[in-house]
Length: 129
Image 1 (cartoon, rainbow, N blue to C red):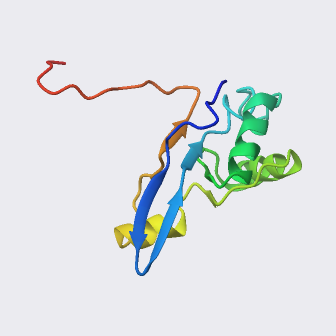
Image 2: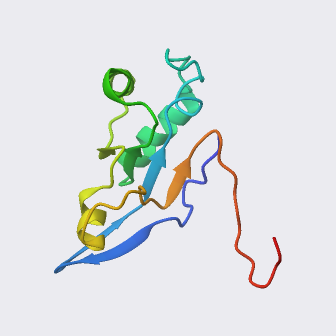
């Protein structure tokens, strides 16, 4: 996993009188931060974890975005914390986005979504699907 250090992927939102400028990254757990061994936790993806820690240290906001719930989610959050990875939100939007949209949308809003099952889809006007 390679991230360009100066990649322009930040967002600017005007909220009330203040401004928030930060890159928001929603990251999946199983298959992304660790090997996919659900409901167990697989081997740590150290490259992804270290990259996310560095990005957060440089101002990125992180959201853990996973299908895990209950005790399995608690276990995943504890596992991440033990690996030095902290989140601004877990399966939820960050407070600034909730304020911006006037409520908590069902879909987690982020500038980037890291997921082992992701597919990049580019909109091209006029193209038939």
